[in-house]
Length: 143
Image (cartoon, rainbow, N blue to C red; front, side, top):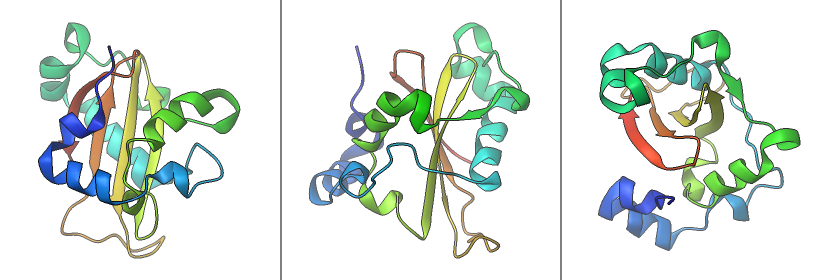
């Protein structure tokens, strides 16, 4: 059973999702390219033992920062397209940067608001949504 992202992100997100085109409508390649800042968001989540104990199977993500892999069109197009269908367009275009990762048996959508490649908007670092190997949402975190 897969969970629709709209049920996790709440009523306001549902309005955004219904009123804006999805990322897949604007993106030629299914897998977006992230950078060190989006990867760092995933590192923060998988290194947080409290999050692992509460959300991960067996209390561990079963992965280290070295295991983090950005999803690519060559091997992960179907998973990327699944994620694109649930990500609002404004979260996939500047100034937002979103990227998709896998570490262990988990998938991650990492999103960060940035003004430019070198300058991060510091009111909030970003967010990470975590999925299990069956693409069920298991957690969403502000990091």
